[in-house]
Image (cartoon, rainbow over all chains, first blue to last red):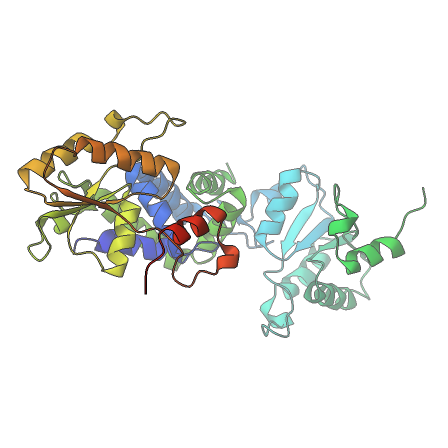
Length: 197
Length: 197
């Protein structure tokens, strides 16, 4: 009996992404040491998320309401959609506050290895939205990987006949990046795409 | 309102040891994606730990009862105490199942830098136990650091006049360790302490 509650909590925590059994043990020990401060607060926060968070029926974002606050916002451009792989990408763009249009979450990218086909992605809904919401510009903010490129190519081929501007994020050396640490592919691409001063 | 519940949970998770804001975001996104499977189970496990885990009044271990199951066990040697810095060290020793005596958790080690003095540690209780439980052997299983050595020296000086055998863990090359990867201090120590075959 003795250790079961602790061991069970460690097992659950260890299954979370980016954690293993060692970090799970550290976290659980910390929780028990500071139990009065940590555990009730964490339980409340988990319960609030569990009870209140829904998937937005329009873009696929998580929010307390569906459609989500971004889809409902009257302050955002209505005719630009930024297509992202996952909600974490939406969060990354929102943290900077640099993008003022709306989003569409694909829920993944095409992958031959993982067997992800167009049917597994939220693409039909994207095509519907382009028609029904009079979208004029699509920004494909997908990962700069082979699978990301294939997905962008696939989506842009579907949109060929529609009257919509399609763009992808610029590629090159990141801000603050040192050449010495860049891979050959990035350096070649940055050279090919060099900008006249 | 929109993101508050999610943001609040991310903030709480990010404060746990070995996590930062990026891994907290990954974990919370995973929790929301699999919420039916993950969140209720995690809440129950947290609540069980919160409601049931106590600090053992004898050794300082966490358990559902106080005294804990190790202190109450009749199958363990009664006269040997293994002194450890923290409960994670007790867990490490118990995982191997190699030690069959009882434990005493110091709750830290002496540290001039962090300002930890003997009064901050569970040392008085250790001295009491040695008398009241007729302890004949103390194993000081403290970290092999300078602070650990100082703490071991301090405790053994307190026990000088008592009729109790004191030992520390052996130091040297770990099992499977390659010389090339060892620091000079460890190699010197392993040479000095070399064993005749």
